[in-house]
Amino acid sequence: MEEKMVVKISDNIVSPLGLTSEENYSAVKAGQSRLSRYEGKWNLPEPFVASLIDREKIQVDGHYTFFEQIVIKSASTAIAEAGIDPASPRVIFVLSTTKGNVYLLDNGITDFPDERVLLGVTADVVARHFGNPNKPVVVSNACISGVCTQIVAMRLLERGAYDYAVVVGADMQSPFIVSGFQSFKALSPEQCKPFDASRRGLNLGEAAATMVLGTKETDGCWKLVRGAIRNDANHISGPSRVGEGSYRALKYVLGDCPADEIAFVNAHERRDGIHSRRTGWFA
View (cartoon, rainbow, N blue to C red):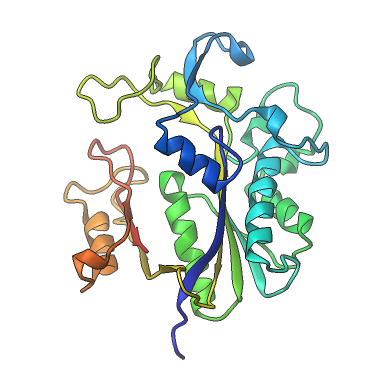
């Protein structure tokens, strides 16, 4: 069977910087971050610095959680730009998230059924919103979820299982999540400096981003050429000291591709053993 070429047909980003990819790109070029210091927000005892979406900019629908709303908002724009029928059985929805509706576990939230906190149920809610008949795919692999999701969608299209994949990655913030990071003492009390020797932690953010992938190549399309997922099985959250997973993934992904033809490489790596080094990707 001839291998199909997978391409990106459209995209969208909903974040504190804007509601379209163009708005986000322009904001980043202008050096904007939307990071703010929050004190007393959600009745949390400690202040934190984060970049949060203005809830008033997202259409409120009582049938959907805020997380589902930003996913639907981003997917709707990308789908419209792609000009595809999201209700077609030849379209698959693939959702990437690490936390989803976990905020529903917070005390006092009773507007939604308990099972809505399950990622599979959340993905079903989104897919049914668009009238899609297929069982959506959910990928939740911590920090490498986004890259893994693209690879999963690419494989589904390459083997001809579907004509299009609506790939959405999203996460939101809540008292449950922020307090969890605070308990790890992982948050910076100021704008973080990830490459600075005196860095003090990280900042949290929230966003939803969508790519519509297909196999009909047109001029100017970004091509998803090759992806790899390698788990060195050393530890649930710590890689082997030699970085076996990262090495094997990148070796496969790069192959014999000339360096001047590589547009982008995404590899997750932490040398302190907190996260597993196991995924590489380029397109």
